[in-house]
Image (cartoon, one colour):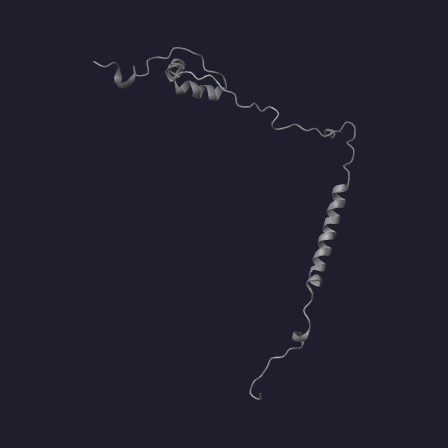
Length: 125
């Protein structure tokens, strides 16, 4: 073929490097890094000198379960809804529960004023 030109380059004829040759430097670097981390973590902390304000490390590990205080569900007696509503009205309604949440003390059971007595300027005529 007289009119067709082909591109030739000397490097195109060389074989490509194998994946193992490309991976070898990465593997060596990873091994060196992991060895350095292992040596650094294996060093022991110096003993605390007497009179130091740093606390000493515990001599034994202690395990405390996060579920140690778990109380399983137990059936509770159900009261009538009328009694529950009357009790809420007796202790002061939702405001008593809001006070209880902010003070962490149970609301006292007192008689609350009539809820509609002070609205619209007094009693109805």
